[in-house]
Length: 318
Image 1 (cartoon, rainbow, N blue to C red):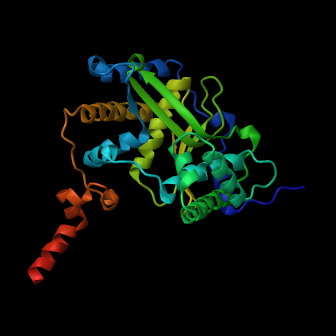
Image 2 (cartoon, rainbow, N blue to C red):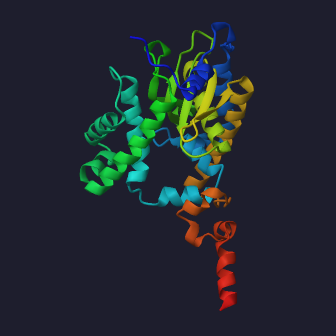
Image 3 (cartoon, rainbow, N blue to C red):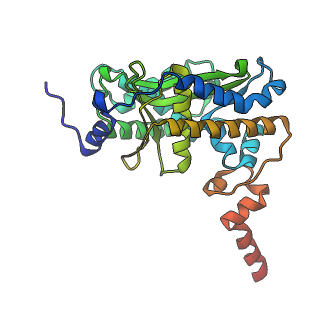
């Protein structure tokens, strides 16, 4: 049987991700050691302060937080984490998408979500505990939220073929300074692979909502860790916005990787200083202030949102 025709969004993804062999960049094999040396030189001052059995873990989220609002990072780190349907949606949807990529025949989105829920509930982590004990209404809400994301993915992406080497929830890790600093991440989706020093992999982050400059930095961090892991970086990064059916691609260059090194060094230093209490967290207001757990006691954030001005107006009226 002939495969069904692709819709324009699917064809756009196919055109974006494809590249002829002679269009793929070739990186110097010494790049891996160069990036590692640059990172370790920049973080060498942390060696006396961090034990290898209690390393500093650096993730894309932690870097985004400290390069954004440090106060929010400290507040969230100290807050008790609780699962709910909105938070669990991403984990369930990603698992369902992973299953759909490798499913025989045409995957039904809701079947994939139900299979993902069953598999995640059999785990041993906090999400598994929550899934086994949450109320039926919360489970139904989670099922609906995850299904919407999976449907959108299947509508926007062409069926992924085995020869494209699709990997979902791919783990990345690089140990620095004898294991004292660990760079880690998990990619939503990658396609292709390196062939020697020739880059062939595309790393994709699936996003809802709109574009943010931090999304570029997230993927650049992944490209750096991939380069440290394999020696050959990915050839392309792409944030894919499911709500709009659009991708924001960026080719990987040596300059991009060196910029990611500098950002990682700066972020790791701040993370360590905040963790040991030698730095007062800076407050940087932004659009995320509205959802920040520190907002009630943060005058900078409230002023940014106009809430203090609104309160002053109400008092003046009285």
